Image (cartoon, rainbow, N blue to C red):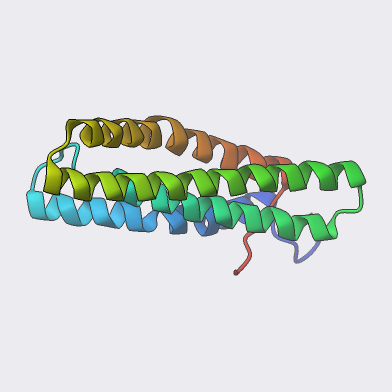
Length: 155
């Protein structure tokens, strides 16, 4: 390590805080507020629609971080790989926004119309968001940071 240069562990911690913790903060704060108000930990404590919009923010954050990294790369193969991963995270952001819209529509329509089909769609979207997209994005984000040695940047 050169004099005055920070270790990789320091950059990794800052990147995790800036690109994973901050985008997911509204989800955890909303769950904490519901937990305080309901005084019971149940399935409705953490909202899947909150998680979906936070995952969209997380995906866009990583997408932008990857695109910033492309500018400084000189290797064409590494540039192409970085751009393809940026596209994958953009796709995750779009899917998350669509899921958010579906969940908000279904939850408001279920309350008004009591349609079983909308309630079933809402349940599937929630399960997909909680048990597939959330862990997948966290694992992929972590792997992408290690692979490309991304650093925290201010938007």
